[in-house]
Image 1 (tube, rainbow, N blue to C red):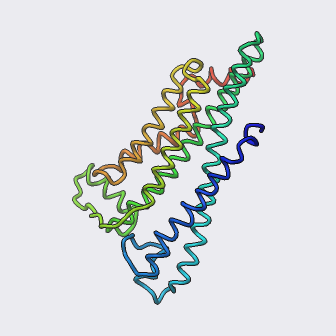
Image 2 (image 1 turned 90 degrees about the vertical axis):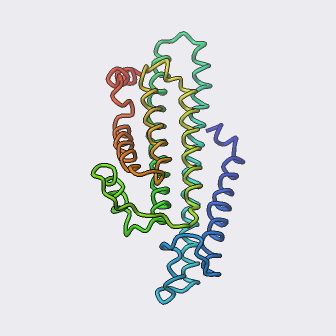
Image 3 (image 1 turned 180 degrees about the vertical axis):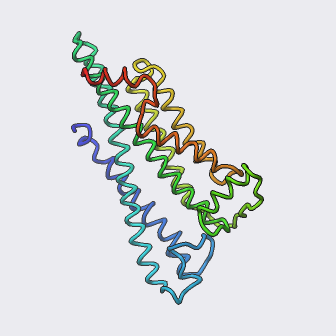
Length: 269
């Protein structure tokens, strides 16, 4: 709590960036200006249908609705990044406590420290998986909008069939900007950095054998799947396998590696 209370500037800076850039700036550039001048640099979706179907909704109604939506999105971004900052602070605090405990020869204290490291690593791993899955959803939506597919399910299904059974129905991509890809890339980068920092501070490689390596491999597979979206035919196979691995990691963060032994140590603490 002292570390959190000692850095209010960090939280205010993140708040202003999320509200100012992710909220106001993106709303004006991606939604408001195209609605006002009728430009079609971005794919038509729920926030810009008024450009081609003005009889369905007015420009002012679209501007107001998208403004509320982007305000909600920017607040969600703020909560997301604050969560990552708190995970970073937990790992930093754990490192300080661990260094102090190393000066005390107490087996019970060592077991307690080991239990904390196990709980911290499991929780952070689940949070990182969830964060990258959010980014994957954002990029899937962004890339899908610039295709001529009727819906996202048929787009993914045809991409899968193109590789497995040789289906030639490949949807072409339209020449539209996809600003959400930059936002999702930022989420992936910050999330992976948080995971790497926690892994280095907790020191799982020395304590739990191959479990951290499997965790890192799972995160790497998700990053590869994120990068592969829309890049080549058959990306849906890579994406599906990575999501299955990530789902297994949410239920068993140790990914089957020494899980019983690790849990027994944590129970002792």
